[in-house]
Length: 461
Image 1 (cartoon, helix red, strand yellow):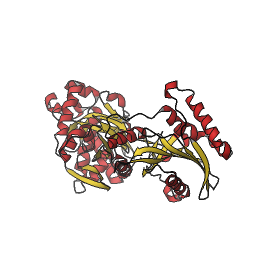
Image 2 (spheres, rainbow, N blue to C red):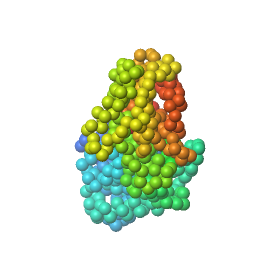
Image 3 (tube, one colour):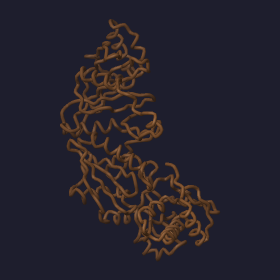
Image 4 (tube, rainbow, N blue to C red):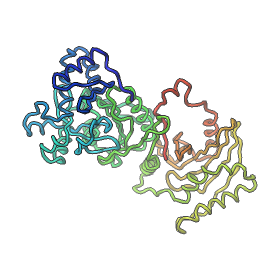
């Protein structure tokens, strides 16, 4: 995210306030640096000025700069009170690790997700003072301080909550507040859900996003997650991009207090969906009402998702020899597996078809038995001469009705798998129609849109 420049009047007030506290600083966008090389992020000040337009600017800047000085130089730079009083004002504050001027000063910070750290912060009238490791050590045992701080966070009142429907029965809980601790409430999500929904989270937890410090979005993990997940990913990425106090553009899977990222930034700034196999398997298990769903069989999965997407040369195999070549490749794929994991090629067959203007090879596979195994694979050679594309029709259950069905995926460059559609059937004809529609679709980005890629799309590696 690009740094925001301070307008001249605000920049002058910032320099004057730092000078009052004995620090001469130079400004670099929304970052101040003093003579000792210490950095002070000013993004929070910009957000504060926007939120309180009627407040006297000098007083607002002076108070906030004091908080920054205390945060960077330690609480002894300000009036922190006695150790007991200080400990009673501690809260856990979630921050992006890249905002740290000197990570070595915060060894107590707990990484709760890749790049996201939980700090100990002091409550104050205008903001939060992030304590250094040295300051935290003076207050007591870090584990006990963190436990008490989280308990204190869980007891805070919810400022604003709404349930936003995404259609077809799914929806998102949206919690918003003026406190910078709002996004950090993901650390106590079980208690928050209990308060706003009146019940416990399900055993599989929730999908959650905290795009800004002042906003938290989540949904219990149930059979509607595939639909809800798309809305959550798009909303979180958009709010992160538009916020003056961004926290994380990512979506996470919360399970028992652990946060597993479900997205990562890929090529062109797009968000790739990761852990999609695990998500689909969990949804299928829930829809079938089974405690333990079989794992994908290695022979079946590797043939459909690893070998076939690499075989552009199959396009040159004569039609009458195609079934024999597929069976040979099936046996070759299983040769490296233990004998007990090798499968018979029952039902394996292939044929060339024409999908509109595009030449396609449809490969029907042995009947799938586990989520993410495939009913069929299509290798398509677009009419415009662009590189071949590989589409998969994978076993799953409809996330809304619970009916047995399939999802449509595509293996793209660099081993990346995109989930295009849920709610498919296992039939070859609708599969081919859907693939043809994707091949005929116009490019996703116009020249204008390409200048600022959207962080969207569902992918797996």
